[in-house]
Length: 181
Image (tube, rainbow, N blue to C red; front, side, top):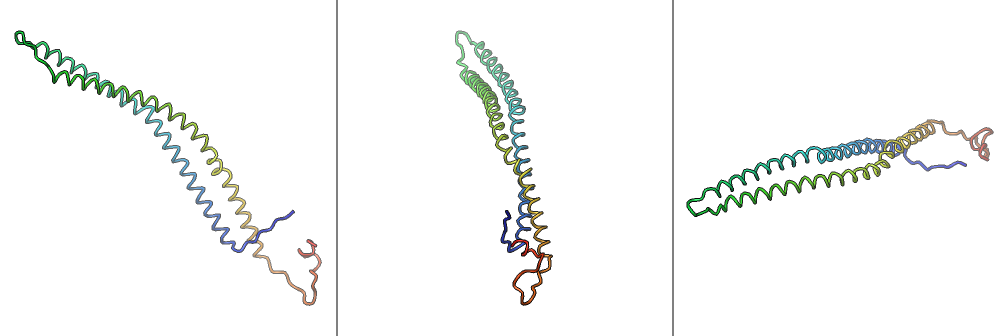
């Protein structure tokens, strides 16, 4: 069983082939760029963000210790029976403790989101396998088919037109038309 196509422009087939090749290049580049971006985001979450927040926690512990020392120093400055209120020192200690809790919460959030991002990336990579398969396998097969089609069309166009014998309505023996009858 043969199938036929009505091709009106071989150039259009060639233009489509060029566009498909451009798509393949751009899609492959985009897939690599997306993978790299995902890898960098995960690396930031796994390494840089925890390191930053651990450093902030250390700084906050130091600040809490300084604020406690300042508060105790203030409380020891009793003049006679009068003890100072040390309101500024108490506020500084509360402020340092709030910052410490916030830094600890941020580190915990980084841990939580790191796990969540790992799960999402695994799912994303699974879905992207289909796109990668298309770009790496299906598109090259289509390009090869288009190359063969263009070659066939070019060779068809290069053939001389069949010569008609005047007065005869039947095709000459051995011609393509005779073989199809």
